Amino acid sequence: MGLLEGKRALITGVANERSIAYGIAKAFKREGAELAFSYATPKLEKRVKEIARSLGSELVFKCDVTLDEDIEALAEGLKKSWGSLDVLVHSIAFAPKEEFKGGVIDTSREGFKVAMEVSVYSLIALARALLPLMEGRKGSIITLSYYGAEKVVPHYNVMGIAKAALESTVRYLAYDLAKHGHRVNAISAGPVKTLAAYSITGFHLLMEHTSKVNPFRRPITIDEVGDAAVFLASELSRAVTGEVIHVDNGYHIMGVFDREEEIKKEVFGKDG
Ligand code: NAP
Image (cartoon, rainbow, N blue to C red; front, side, top):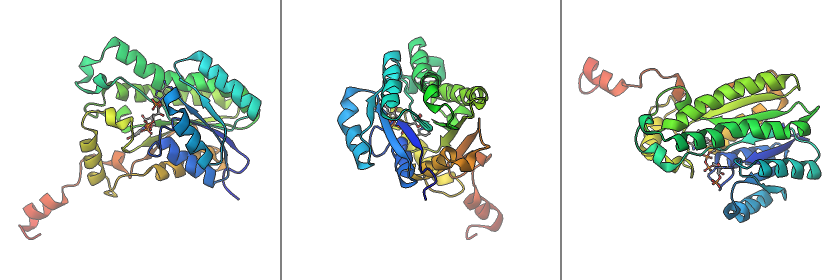
């Protein structure tokens, strides 16, 4: 029996098969969950419907998280189709491309507002709208963060600030929703080549560096994020809430990156 047998999960943020949310959806399907999906703009409808169908789901809703009417329609649609919900995967973030070009000092008022609204407020808005569907279900809400919330990652700029706010929101929501029996957690994923990631100036260099210096010396995969999300969605994590779990091959534990080759040369001479 799968770890998520009998659970109903809404997956937001699938843009294509590279999306982190797609890795999560595949893992949830493998573990027996029923899936529903939402997408932001009409141009994604066909693609997301195909992906949903490939994972055995016909439940696909348009939901631009900046629009209250879309969020209400999503909650209403899920109520009609399922009547209940166990898991919300919030895999949504956005900031205008210009915000990643310079430094944080260049952040525009509008860029700041957009980044915070789409990437942070949307978690609160979705959680509130879907709360009635989770009543009595011991729900699990999972969002996606990044190390730029904790430390400076050049060019990540306003999105780092938004992710810090998102991680704080996870803690506050975890406190609020505990009285309903629900949990709220984040996965801080290592860099993955996705559409959203390509907006970040120099992302390929960031990815190359991170993959080379983490303790396992390899990039993470969306399937690895999916497996961590299964844990957070399942009863196995019933005492875990308000947490940020790093799925980054241990990159975040490093204080100084490995200088083994340089040390060998300096201490033992050229041949090591
Ligand atoms: P992705 O495939 O591009 O997914 C981002 C999703 O956000 C897209 O489906 C996008 O829809 C959606 N979105 C943007 N604005 C929206 C809005 N107003 N309403 C509803 N949905 C909206 O990229 P991803 O990397 O998988 O990103 C998913 C999450 O993982 C994000 O929170 C991201 O910050 C986080 N994350 C990513 C990485 C990484 O390296 N890729 C690392 C750590 C954390 P459209 O395509 O229609 O705009």
